[in-house]
Length: 88
Image 1 (cartoon, rainbow, N blue to C red):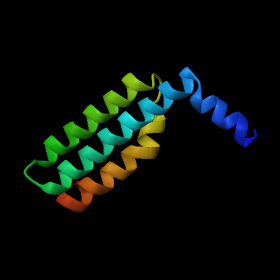
Image 2: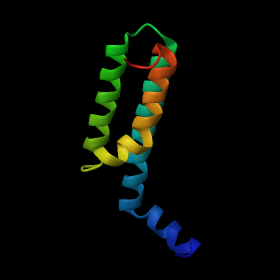
Image 3: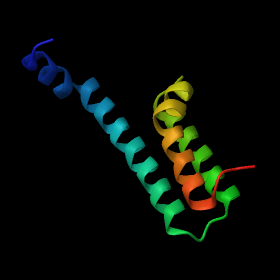
Image 4: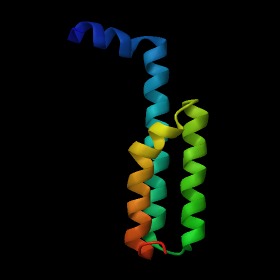
C-alpha cells in the first residue's frame, strides 16, 4: 500500500468512522487507567470498570473480545495489580 492509498482510505467516510471509533476506545481505556490509578475505587470497582470498557470495545468493534483482552486487557490488569497487588 502506498502512502497516497493509505491517506485516501483514512479520508474516506469508512476510514473516518474507524478512526473515530479507535479514538473513543482509546479515550475509554485511558480514562479507566487514570481512574484506577487515582484511587478511591475498590478492586471490585476497578475490575467492573475494565469490564465496562471491554463491553464498550465490543459495541464499537463487534467480535473484538480477544483483541481487547490482548491489547488493552493486559494493560489494565497490570494497572490493577500495581494499584491493589496481585490477585490471590
